[in-house]
Structure formats: C-alpha cells, structure tokens
Image (cartoon, rainbow, N blue to C red):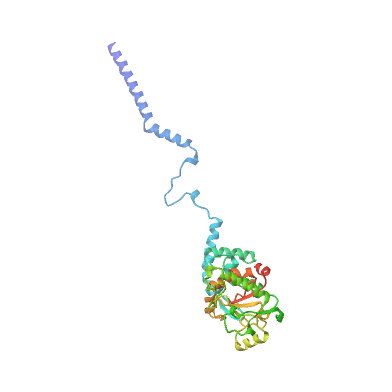
Length: 326
C-alpha cells in the first residue's frame, strides 16, 4: 500500500514536470518565432520595408526624367553649340563673307528679350527656341545660319520702305553743335524736319540718363566736347553720294548704297565710338560694346528710329508707330 502511494506521487510529479516543460517551450524560441512570423504575415505590404544593398535604390525611389529636365539638357547642348557658332558660323551678306554673329549680340538679345546683351547660356537658348518656334523655324535653341538669316530679314524689313529724295522744303539746317565734326560745312548739315525733331527728343532722353555719363552743358544739352550721339552724317544728295562711292570703289553692296536712305534726310549716322563709320570687324566690335550703342538698341525705337544692323552708327527714322512694331 505504501508502495502504491509512492508510485502515484511520483507519477503526479512527472506529469507536473512535463507540463512545466511544455509551458517553458511555448514561451521561448520556437513559440516566439512562430508568433512573429504570424504577425509579420498580417502586416500591410506597404508598411513592410524592402531591404536592398545601399548601392541599389528601390525602383520606386528612382526619379523619373521630366520634360523640364529633358529641355534643360537640350538647352545646355544648344548653349555649347552657340558658344562655338557665335564666332565661327560662316555666312555672307552684301557679297562679303562673314564669320560668327558676335557683332550682333545686343540686337539679338533685344529681339529675344533676354538680358545682359550677350548670347550665351541655357536661358539664351531657351529664349531663342521660343523665338524660332514663333517664326516657323525648328525650335532647336541653336543660332545657326537659317536662324541668323531670318533675324537679318526682320532687321532689314524694319528699315525705311520709301526712299524718295527729300524735297528742299522737307529739310532744315541743323546747327553745327549737333555734329560730330564741328567744321562740317553747311551743305552737309541738312536733316528731314520730323527726323530732326525725333532726334532731339532722343538726345534729351540720353542726356537725362545718368548711366551714360555724358558731358552736358548747364542747360542739360550735350557739351561741345562730348562726341557720343552727335550726328556724323545726315542728308546726302545723289551727287554727294556718287562722290563718296568714287572715293571708295571697293565698298560693295554692304557699303555705300547706290540708292542710299540718306537721300531721304531720314537716315542719321550717329557717333557710337571708335572710327565713326569704319566697317572693319575690329571697329564694329568696339562700337557694339559702348554704352551709347547699347542704349540706342534698347531705346531708339521709342523715338521712331530703327537700326541698320550691319552699321552700328546708322539709324533710320520710320516713325514711332512703325518702330513700335518690332
């Protein structure tokens, strides 16, 4: 009897030990791993991070190439091309071979409404692309030969259309103080009346602009020693023009015109620096950098004047209504 009781006690002890062991296992490794696996499977997929090597970004985080980025890349390439063509583009005007378009950057920038007066950079290429598109050209942002010829066509098309010789009553004698050469003879100081009035208004605006640093009299007019903006040449008779051509037989079509706008009295050669009317590239390169020339590019149309792009000094009065339609 005593042995049976002892056996039962041992059996109960064994069962208790087994139960304790099972409970211990459930609370440790195997049970924990199983619980975490079940919990992970129950999480929403969007909240489960994907583990990748640091050098391999997730597909969802790779930025897509936008239209803006593509345009920026194209304009950067166009800017590099323009930097080369600015000095190397081969083209011709008036029977004369030309190289590059750097001499016309102030006019080009004004046409494109860009700042700085220089043709360079992505912004210039972007503005040129817009202008090309509006002009029916391929919007490449590259100022190539086709684009330059289209610009030249617009500049030339904005000049005087009617070149009838001025009648004596349409002319007035301008004072010698308005001229670059203080000894210019009276016969060469005539100007068409409306043109002269517009010139004096433009001159007053230039004199009032402190950024130009012009030398002025107490009355606010150009001082005798100031040369910028003064008239180099105005009305020319056909006979005088023929005399000039005889003196420069190799001037070509881009030089002294057979049918000159100076015949109208509405064309003025104004001093903008350098040799007053020398067409060599070195001289024109100097002239287009002066404050006087750049001021005219930005302001002359307000007073009715349009440029002859090839000669920085040459400006023609077409009237304020016509000049405003740039």
